[in-house]
Figure (cartoon, rainbow, N blue to C red):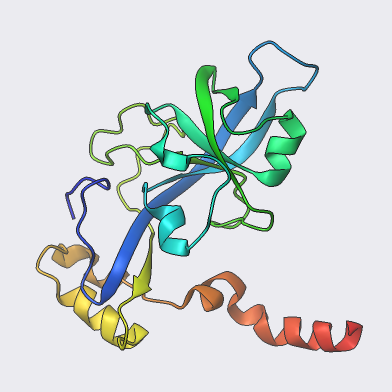
Length: 193
C-alpha cells in the first residue's frame, strides 16, 4: 500500500494500526560523561505506536518538536543517565530524548530505542539505514471483530496489492510474542511456582 505511515488510514477490521521496522543503531553521548558508545536494537515506528498499545511514556513523546527525536527504554536511559529532554547521538547525528518507555516494554522483541518512522516511500533521514519495502503492522481489532474476520477484511481491501494478499497474517499479539513456547512457559511457571 503506497501511502505515508504518518497519514495511513486504519485498515478494515482494525480500530487502529501502526507500522514498524527494526535495525541496529549506534548511540553515544554528546561528549559528556564517561559512558561508552553502545550499539542497540531499535525500531522505527509510526507516531501512534505507543498510543495504540496504551503505553504511557515519561516525557512528551512524539509531541516533541523536530524529526530527530527518540524514545528510550528505561534501562537504556539509566545506562546513559538521561531523562526526557536530554540528548544522544544516533549514528553520529544529535537526537532529543522525547520520552522514556516504562520498564518491561520491548516491542518489537529486543528493542531498546524507538524512532519515528519516516515516510516509508522516501526513506528521508532513516537512521536505521533501511530500504524496507515491507513493514510489519501491529493493530487493535475493532470491537466485535475476530482475528479471522480482520484477516479476511484486510486481504479484501482494494488498497492492498494482489501480490501481498498471501503475506497477510492477523495473529494475536500474545501468540506472536510467545508462539509455540506458551505450553513450555506454563509448565516452567508451574514447576518454579
